[in-house]
Image 1 (cartoon, rainbow, N blue to C red):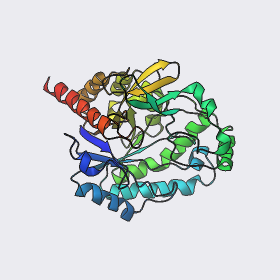
Image 2 (spheres, rainbow, N blue to C red):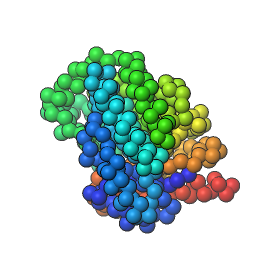
Image 3 (cartoon, one colour):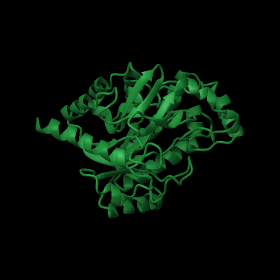
Image 4 (tube, rainbow, N blue to C red):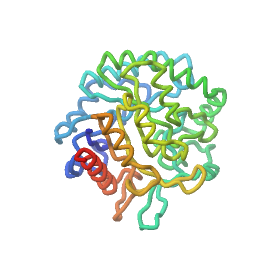
Length: 342
């Protein structure tokens, strides 16, 4: 496996120089965060980011993410132009030898938490989600009140999107995903890029919006929409593991040939549709069993520690501090080494 680490670019308080000091990390996961959704990522823009990564002694292993415009998910007439732009971005990523593009198909809201700093008993704090607390967020003011939400919509924009998605049932969303993949997968295959869809986080409807990538069966269905090795998944143990019915090691075994990227983090479920993120070895998801399945399958792709707690007084991007993710990286490296040697 290729132990990797997410980096948010030159503005990230976690520098490449700090990441370099984490044993075993050879790859970087990043993106061109300043390119507006729906526009083409130019070779020059991607190359500038890659040069920084290469210059620090890493490989640019995964683009996470080239975001999809909501018109694609809604199946609007503008989607063909937007999909064409997406294809050109994928071609440019492939031209620079970056092997994986992670993306998601969550309507309007990306990963969602109701608390960015839930105090834990050990004195740290972590990202948390309590479904009933969604009612405390006033969407009439846009997305500014949502913790952790990066893309900002005005109240009018958000109202329009929510109204549009009220007309979209699950099967229509599946149809729109298939339409997208039928056009993008052949381009990715030709460009030498593997597409890796990320499961919905959390894996159930949020604010009444449909969410379809919520289980192993759903991810298997994605792979069947366009049957190509270029059409695969991101195995995210935390997103899937938030739902107690998802057996993540079994999903890893069933989809071993289509796993192109792995996020490993842990969650502690403390009620129905309630969880907080935990230490890598300390939650309800069996990361050891997942790693065993990946090792048995001969997985040789990128794995990154996902969200971590904020520990030792660190202040920074919630879930993306240096210290706990560095501990997570070493835990994953230790698991992989022990499994390999046994």
